[in-house]
Image (cartoon, rainbow, N blue to C red; front, side):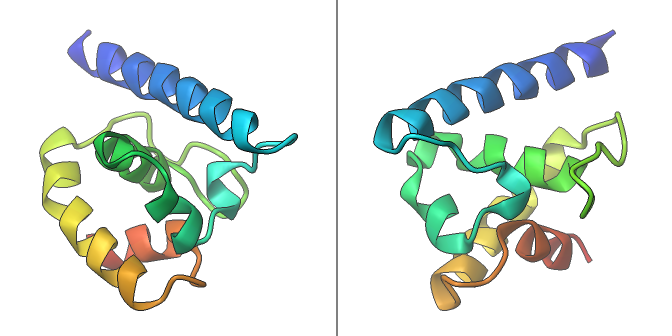
Amino acid sequence: MKKYFVIGAVITSLASMSAMAADKKDEAKPVAEWTCEEFLAIDDNFYPTAVGVGELLTKKDKVEDAVLDVDGIQTITPLVIDACKKDTKANFVEQVKKAKQ
């Protein structure tokens, strides 16, 4: 039950991030297509949520695993931020996948 609550919270946060992004431009980009530059442009408080969503996605924008490792997200978020600061043009989801390894 707790896992479903976490997944629901992530989806809700993702929806609010998309709404904020839509304010800045007409059409929001899916998280799977974000560059690191776009990831770094969101509010710092949303970094762990975005990393969690990036961890769940595959290259086809499908949820890879319905179970989200919340403790793992806290561990890899700083790694993703550092990697994205080094290469702002890199694909955000790819940086998340690399940080997980």
